[in-house]
View (cartoon, rainbow, N blue to C red):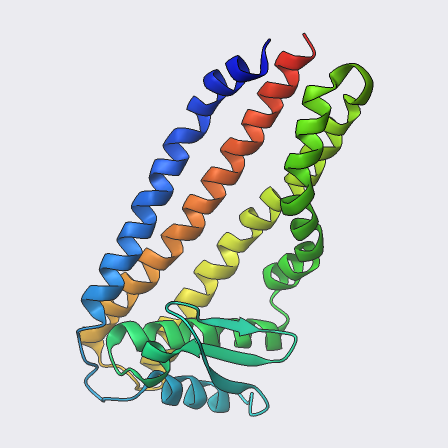
Length: 232
């Protein structure tokens, strides 16, 4: 089957997942914007919330730092740092508190040896390799199937590691979000009426990981279809 024809037919498999990803991105932006305008009752900053939760979990050695950019919040397990974007670090909205607590949840996961997080971290080097090398190798194998067809199989195998990384990420993120709401409530950092707003922010953020997984899985299926068509 000609290359352009294979592309035209198999791309239909990926389009729904890509549309879902666009929806998820729009959802997280709109939800974040909505609850970033809702001040928390206690008026605590995201940085204060993260520091308080880390200390109460006994993680005094984990630092809280400001990170450049927008929605760049993350936990760095290598340096043991919770990095919060400026609106979250200095903000006192429900969105800021939820995100700060979510990243703190990752630090708690790391300290407690949470299995899914350890598994994801072990997959990370393979996922990086798969993300960078899978498509070039697959394309070479597709174009020169007669002599280098095995490169399609290698490319698919490498891409599988990237897909598995996305799948493993789902329970890690959902667990961090559930921990976040629980930690905020148990430590009295939010009142009961604020829990629903925090959950909305974190649920919207988690949807982006579901969408990324859907895109990865549909792309893997597309590669398998292209491989089968090329070898007919």
